[in-house]
Image 1 (tube, rainbow, N blue to C red):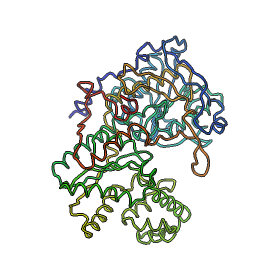
Image 2 (cartoon, one colour):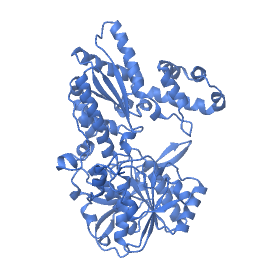
Image 3 (cartoon, helix red, strand yellow):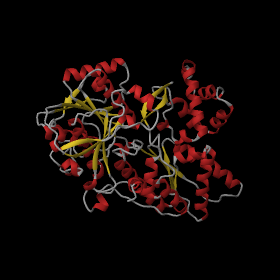
Image 4 (tube, helix red, strand yellow):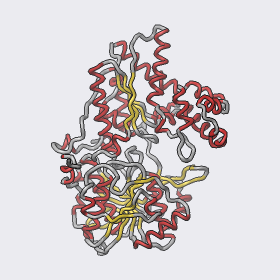
Length: 553
C-alpha cells in the first residue's frame, strides 16, 4: 500500500505564495534600516544584558541591490518547543531562499531541538529530503525539543559546533522562550567575536507570541480551524441529540486566544476567557455559578444541551486557585522527600491539606478528589503543577452537576443535566497547514534567509498585513530585544519576550462579548467544516476571525 494519502500528494505540488517583495530575485531585496529601537519597558536592564544587540533598528525588506547575497553560506535551522502546523514550510522557504542566492549553500537541520546544536547532531537538508515534507504538518523532518541553552557549558558547546561546522547563521523556529534564547545566543556570538548570525521565527499555536510587530504566530490559524471543525461537529450532534452538555477544553495555558478564536468561529453557548475571569477576580464557585445560570435558562426553554469552551490554563487565572497552586508548589518543594515517601493518595492529600493556609485549605477541600490528586501528583521537572494535565473540564462538569442538584432540591431547577468532556490539543498541533499557514510559514522562512543575506542578527522574521491577501503582505526583520521585558523567573530577573494575553478592550473580545448572551440561549451554532485547500478564496484563503477583527477587515 502507498504511504502517501491523495491529499498528501496533492499538497506536495502546492506552491506557496510570497509577499510581492520576496517574489523578486533574492539579490534585489535589501533591508532598509530605520531608527534605533527601544524596548517597551526595563530598558536599562536590557541594555546591560544585550550591549551588542539592544537598540537595533527595524529592517524593512524593499527593492534594492545586495552584493553580498550570493555568498556561499552554511546555515543551521532548529525547531524548538511544541509542534505547530507549518514548521516544514518555514524550512522550505529558508532552503529555497538559500539555494536561490547560491546553489552551493548548505542548510543543516539540527536534530531534536536545541540539544542538537549542543550535541552537534545535524543532517543536511536536501531537495529530495524536503520533497517529502513540503506543505505538510509536523516537525518530524528533524524533530523538536525543549532544551534551553543557558549554561556556560551549553554556550561553549554551541560555539564549538558552529566553529566545527563553519556555520554562518542559525535560524531558531520557536515561541517566546525560544526566541528569547535566540536573542541571548546572538548576543553571545557578538560578544565572543563570532560571525554566526541568529534569526528567529515566531511559532506557537497558542497565539501568545504577537505584538505591534508580529501580527500572529504561525500554526494558530491551522490549529484553531482544526479545533473549530471538531467543535462545529459536536455542536451539530448536540443540536441533533438534544440531551448532552459538552465541556471542551482547548489548548492555551498562558492565554485564551485559541478558545476565543474558536468561539468566534463556532458560536458556542459558553466560552470562558481566562483573562476576563482574572480581571473580575472571580472565584471558582462564581465561575461554576455562571455556567449553571446558562444551563438553567436553556433548560427552562426545553434545551437540556449545549457546548462550553474552556481554556487549558483557566485554573491558574482564578485567583484563589492560583494561590492554591502556588502554595502546593512551595509545600512540595520544601517537603519533597517526606511527600515522596507517601504512596497512599489519601495520605498525600492530608499531608498537603494540613500545611495549607486557611483559605487555600478551604478551596482544596471543595475540589473533587480526582482533581486534588492531579494537583499533587502531576509535576513538571521544576516541581510545578502541569496545568495541561489537570482535567479542568471535568472539574467544572462535576461542580456544575453538584450545584444544579442543590438547585433542584430548592425547586430552582427542573431540567436534566448530562455532560460529556473533551480535550482538543494534540489534534491541532501537527495538522496539514491551511493555505494561510502554508503561505505564511514559507514567507517567514524566506524572510529569515533575506535577513541573513543582509548581515542581520538578533532579529525575528516578520510578515505583516496578514488580514489582506498575500499580494498585500510585507516582510521585515524586528529586533528581538524591543519585544522583551524583565520578569521574575526561578528567583531572579530574566529577560523574556512578553506573552500576549487576550485584551478585553480589543476588537476580538468585544465582538465575542457583544454576542455571547444571544449564543448562550439559542442554537446559533456555526459549522466551519474541514479545512479546505481548493476552491474560492472565501473558503480556502481566509485568515482567522481574530486577525480580521484586529485589522478591521
